[in-house]
Structure formats: structure tokens, C-alpha cells
Length: 123
Length: 150
Image (cartoon, rainbow over all chains, first blue to last red; front, side):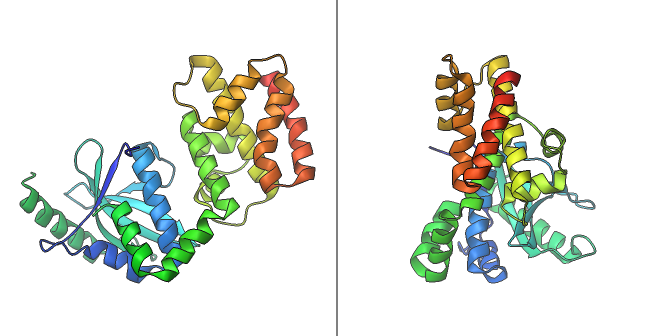
């Protein structure tokens, strides 16, 4: 059965899945397996997930949202935008540290979003 | 790229990932966590509402449905019972269109005159796997309350 929500991970123009490469380097194999389960739940429930799964990114003009994951007691974050009504575009992933979202992560997410939209003709 | 494509690729090229996926699929705590989230979505409750019903905290509910932390068995039991009550209320109140196989089984048996044992069946169904015999017997007691509440 097709999941009701679509979660797309950013790829470069050459088709390199840089974001999922980052996920691979950030996480242990078990965390990767749990990550896959968490994304499957996001595809199933979408924004109906509430509580502490999402947080808006302050200081972002692009409407970035933070998806919060705890995998084997390690906190990870993904920054994404909601593209169409039921489509999320994931842009960056990082391990959470104290002090809020690192500015370089927000910049990278916004650059990737611009690149994606330029290529997919979305404004 | 979508997660399913990545997952298939990882299974091919990473034996560590394949092993972790197999371990996770056999992890009963993770299955309970999945069920807690699915029930909460079905009941249309927030984590805070579930916490209030189960006399625990929102943070504990969050950890439980992520399969994280080291929860007390009694907390797991209270959350499951609270969620099943909420789902049953949802069903009896407005007629839920999409219910899981477990709930369909419960609904079909609960429609008969043996509602107490039917509710017990559902609670035991999860608890005998997760909590063991003693807890399953306690859950039967909870089920009696459940039958009255329903």
C-alpha cells in the first residue's frame, strides 16, 4: 500500500544522495535501521505526528521545519520543508548539540532547497 | 531518493545494516512502541492527553512510542490500557472507519455478550508477549474496568 505522505531526500543534480550519505556517516547501523523506521512512520502519519517530533526553525525565511529524532539515546535533527500538501523534502541531517540549530545547517538547507527548486521549477 | 530505495540499497551493501534491521524487527520493545504510536494516532490523542489518561508524563509517552528509554513495565501497561480505552471510545462514539486487525478482532468479539473476556483477550494478547503471566493477570483485572467503562 502506498504511504499517504511522501518523504523525499535531497540529491544533487548528478543524483548523488548527499543527505542519506550524511545519515550513513552520522549514525551506527542500528541507528540507521531505527532511522528508516522513523521515516516510515513519518510517511504513514505525516504532520499528524505531534508532541516533540517537529519544531519550526526560527530565523529561516524558507519555512524550514525541524524533525526531531532520538535513536538509541542520541538526538538527531533533520531540516525539511513541506513541498506539496503531502510531500516533505528533507535537506540536512545532523547530531543535535546544545545551543540550538547551527547556522551553517540552516544555510546549507536553504542552499539545497534553492538548488532543488531551480531544478524542479518550483517557486 | 525515497527511504525504501535507500533501505534496499543498504541491505545489499551493508551487512551491519542488514543485521541491525533483523535485530530491530525481532525487538519486542520496538513493536510495542510501534503499537503505542499507532493506537495514539487511531485515538486522535496528543502525547499530553495520553500522559494524563495514563498518569504519566508527556516525555515518558514520547520515549515509549520511539522505543527509547528504560520504561517501567507498569507505565507501559497503563499507557496501553489508556490507549485501548480511548480507541474503543472513539469506535463506539463515531464509528472508526479504519481499525487495525487487533481492534477488528476486539470489536467483533466485544459485540457478543462476553465483553469482559473479549477485552481481556486484547490486553493479554499484547501483555503475554511483553509483560509475562503475572502482568497479564493484572491486565485481566484492568479489563474488567475496561468492560464497565466501555
